[in-house]
Amino acid sequence: MPSLSLQNAASLVTFPGSGPIRGTALTQPDVLAGATVVAEGGRIASVGDGGPAEATFDATGCTIVAGFVDPHTHLPFYGWRADEDSARLSGLRYEQLHAGEGGIYRSARLLAGASDEQVLDFSGGMARTMLEHGTTTFETKSGYGLSIEAELRQLRLAKKLAEAVPQTVRTTCLAAHAVPKDHMAGEWIGRVATDLLPVVREEGLATACDIYIESIAFALEHAARLSETSSSLGLQMRVHADQLEDGQAGSFAARWGFRSADHLNHTSPDAVDDIAGGDTAAVLLPGATFTLRQNKKPPARSLVDAGAIVALGTDLNPGTSPISSMPFTIALACRTYGLRPAEALAAATVNAAYVLGLEGEIGRIAEGYRADLVVLDVPDIDHLPYRPDRNPVIATVCGGELVHVASSARGRLIR
Ligand code: NIG
Ligand code: FE
Image (cartoon, rainbow, N blue to C red; front, side, top):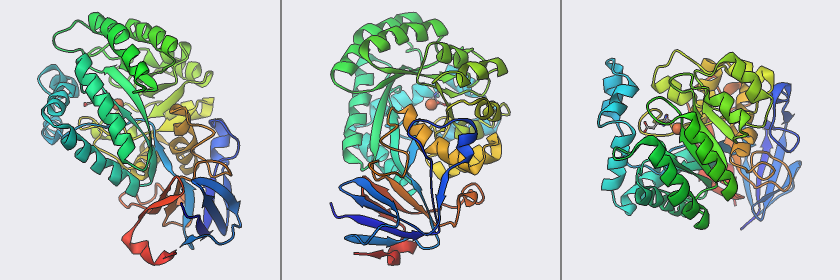
């Protein structure tokens, strides 16, 4: 792979240290002016005043940040559900769609009806769009299978997707997404623990296990059951927590040492200290809040101020968040959750990498880190939330390779 130099950026913004970032450190990034970053052999070789390389991208007037890490998507999936969104815009609730033939059950039918090739084409197209918006690492999940075989199929498709895209991918088993129509909740959880997770582990299909805690889905006792199995298999535990009601899932996740608790719209103020006091990341998904038009927002400011590891993701899925852009998600987080630009950037890079177990490897611009970089056509990060409808990404570098250059920026590349 030829060496690559991104030269003379107006600003290069990254976070010092090595692990996840909390509290006031979130607003204290290193900002370098007139900076050049050089990638060699897929890694970052120098930051600051790099020399020439085999390929050079002129970043004059631009900002360079670490590639965005999207720690929560529902890829691979197949097909959209715009009619459900339209029904919601006319007053129906997500829970009502889920109770009928819609919601997760609908996406499971769409996935079952599509060939492997169709699913990979559709999901690969989404991954390409994500690359154009600066996402260099993302999570994939199952959860649209709803039988042991169909969950395994979705996880194997996630593995094929990972092999086909330039991004780094980490996969989560979300078999506990909706109760299959032919099972009771507890019975299904038992099957997931005994028949599915050991195979997932054996085939290396996932590094984490997730569960949807909600009165329309699963309960805390089910999370406890899966957590026991997951820890014996070396899988991280994650949870879709308190999205539509306060199910005490945020606090439970913190007490059980889960890697993350995601959504948190209804998480109560007393759970904030539980989360902030431990190592469970709070994954905020403002795209879902926006799509569902939820008035109830997570206690995002309290989480940041109390010192929680706050991360940001798109929740890309056809039901509650048909949103794949991390820059747009950052804008939503700033405008609707009250994050500041630097906090949102840390949440979308280093802290999101932590959620996926990739801290120390991904999410920072520092020597030895994987060379995942984004060139933004803005002079500083205050511009990130400022113009939310505009894609600021003009170049994306994945593992030292320039994998996307916007047509407006072609002239900046010299080989
Ligand atoms: O993260 N809340 C549950 N799961 C998804 C929605 C999945 C769907 O509707 O297809 C979420 O919002
Ligand atoms: Fe989700």
